[in-house]
Image (cartoon, rainbow, N blue to C red; front, side, top):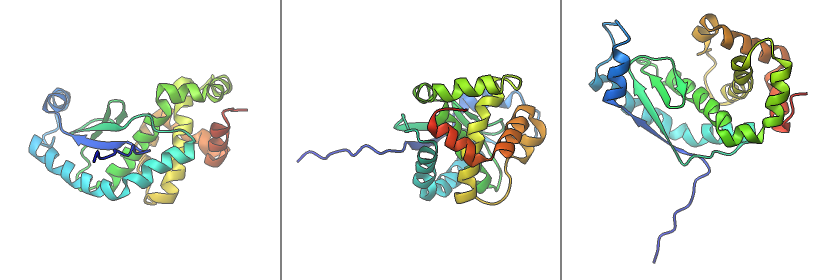
Length: 201
């Protein structure tokens, strides 16, 4: 009897330590407390255990709220000592003794990754074109961050802690701050509704 493989509607997240990637990044920092490779590997074990029971709920929510499907079966998440989190290649730093903060940052980057997938960008092209025209004074980077922030805020209010893990980014990244202002002005639910409708106006 042939065993059937059931395709999941959410991707599998694989956490990985890459010595080469980490070493290249390590050279940019003068931090004497930069985690060793062994510390990063140990940290990965902890966040993997914290993420596993919440993976399906969070990934399904990103897809459901955005109205977009996941188009990847598996996503590598590189964990290195220090960095600004990025969605592609998905890379997060060590947040020592803060597994919940790691999960919040991971959820944000995964939200961005889903929305920025080329096929999903095309599926919402009408929304993006209208939004770029409307927010042209703020720039493209701010525009991209607006629906990501709106969807993430909805997920955070339902499934994640009450703390504001983005506070450091809000205070230091002007694009991020402006995107959050737009979300606050219009309301995250209004932006999500426009995004799902596929039109900004």
